[in-house]
Structures are given as C-alpha cells and as structure tokens.
Amino acid sequence: MDPSKRDAYNKAYVDWALPYTQSYLKLESGKELSLKYEFLTSQLMFIREYLNFLFKDGISLRFVKAFLEKQTFKRNKSRYLVILEGGHLLPFFIAVDEMREIDLIDSKQITSYRRILIYNKLNRRWSEEIANTLIAQIKKDDLEWQGDEAIITHSINKYILTLNVRVKDGDDGKYIAE
Image 1 (cartoon, rainbow, N blue to C red):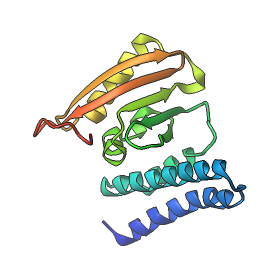
Image 2 (tube, one colour):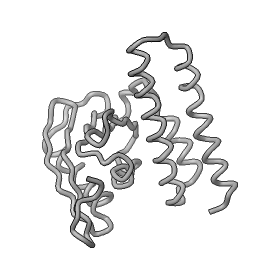
Image 3 (tube, rainbow, N blue to C red):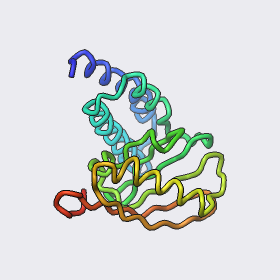
C-alpha cells in the first residue's frame, strides 16, 4: 500500500486523538484520574489498532475519517453504541450508524472480546425479531463470511442487546482469539 496513504491514515488518527489527549492533561489527579487515563489510553490504542486493520483491508481514507468522527466520548443516541467486553480489563466502545460499519472479526483479533453489548439507536427497545435479524446479518456478513462458525447466544434488556460470542476457525476448528 502507498506510504502516503499510510501517512494520511496516521494524520487522520492524530487529528482525531489530539483533543482527547489534550483534555486528559486538564484533569485533576487522584484515583479517578488513573481510571480515566486507563480508559482513555485503552480506547485510543484500540482505535489505533482497528485503523491498522482498515488500512490492511484497503478501506478508503474517506470512510476512515467518517468513522473517526463518530468515535466520541459522549453518547450520540442517533447511533448504535457497540461495547466489546471480556477480552481486556476495560471494555472498548465503538459508535456506528449501521452495524456493517464495524468489522467484528477484526475487532475480536484486537480485543479477544467474548461479549458485545449493542445499544439501539434512540434508545429504542429491541424486539426478538429485530435482534434475530441483526444477529443473522452479523454472522453472515462478518463473523462467518470466511467459513468460520460463530456461536452466539443473546439476551435483551430494553434497548440493550447482549451477544455472547465465540468464533470457531473454519480451517482448524480452534476458537479465534480466546
């Protein structure tokens, strides 16, 4: 891939991350600061690693910039909020307009998550039918598209859809990133 494209990805990331690192410097000291620092650095590193996957996949810089604009530390209820849990001490947060905007199999390789919480747009309640349709889409378009097998159980609590996820590699039968 073109080195200038890599530079453009890096610049997009730095432009996005800089305000968060600057706001961190203004926080007061103490335990709360330590937790905020851990969360902030963890989230920034996750986004950085995720951008590496996007770069390797040849995703356009336009998409990358639009994706980064959605990643804020304040909830925008007009978007899905996706929380990846279970692979690290702290969860990882991703905001998207459509679930197909996130590559969950790449994210699993970064975080080793076991659970996904999906907050519905506008805090709409999840129905069993809509949840099952979304799960089928996630399996078909993302987790199983390369011949892997996704094992997903789910539960619904009003506007939060919780997915317990395991993915078995289609080639060797081992679970991915566990």
